Image (cartoon, rainbow, N blue to C red; front, side):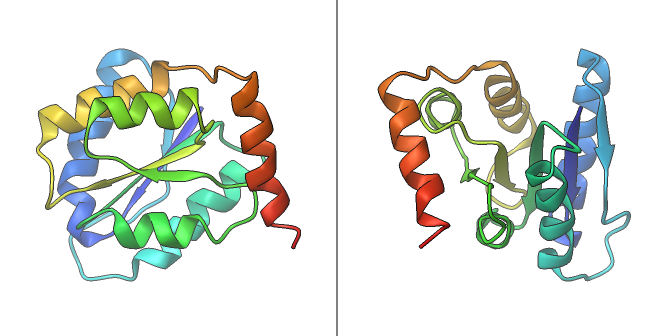
Amino acid sequence: MIVIASDHAGFDLKQEIMAHLREQGVKFEDVGTFNRESCHYPVFAEKAARGVADGTWEKGILVCGTGLGMSMAANKIPGIRCALLSDCFSAEMARAHNDANMMALGGRVIGPELAKRIVDTFLNTGFMGGKHELRVNMIRDLEKK
């Protein structure tokens, strides 16, 4: 199961993504925000990221105006590797090479059709391991310093 969260600026794109996930039969939990009223994105990024970090959810999708704030906030949580994505190639590489466990999108940056393709690529790409596993472990080690 995955988690999805947004702030007010990402709310509309989150709704489009959730409808797409339902159509694809992907199980998810929405942890907010639940309307377009102004809110603080770190609250929702943290809620989703802590759940991914502790294993409650396998992966996470975050949406704010640019994706920048959500990705920055999520990456403060130990164990999170959140990639800000705006194209399918980066989504593929984030999973295959970096074992990203969260992704962030900008609701004011990309449209819903591209967002759906990016989400599909992210969710359907596996981690390659091998030399990339060593590098991901090096990233994990940075949290201990």
